Length: 146
Image 1 (cartoon, helix red, strand yellow):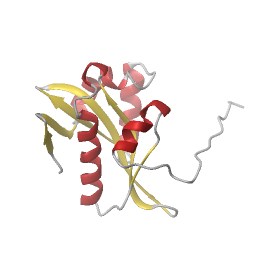
Image 2 (cartoon, one colour):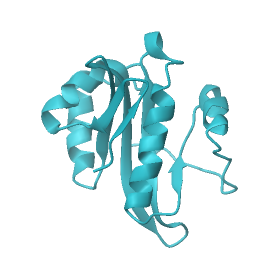
Image 3 (cartoon, helix red, strand yellow):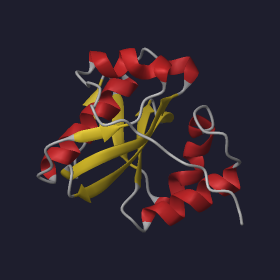
């Protein structure tokens, strides 16, 4: 297990009993009610998705959702699905500490890359962490019920 204590931040994986505690922070990023959030985290956890929390003075101030992925195109890598720091705590180093945790975790799993999707307003933050745009465009098609 990778642990990180930066600027009195405690970065660690959340246990299932702590997932509900992450909801108020995640709700600043995702439009879900708590019940749907918990349902999705439970479902995704079966495929390796984990929630990681950044605690400052015992208070949860940041949350990251990450999962190991193995593909033909990218090989083994870590994918960050969600990363949000409470609006009142942004700029405290919690986001950087969560990214550092993910990178250390990926290295510990012998992975050579971390991938993520970024909102346009978060791109400067990720660029400061040395993340670059991936040349493959991400595309989607919404499937409507038949």
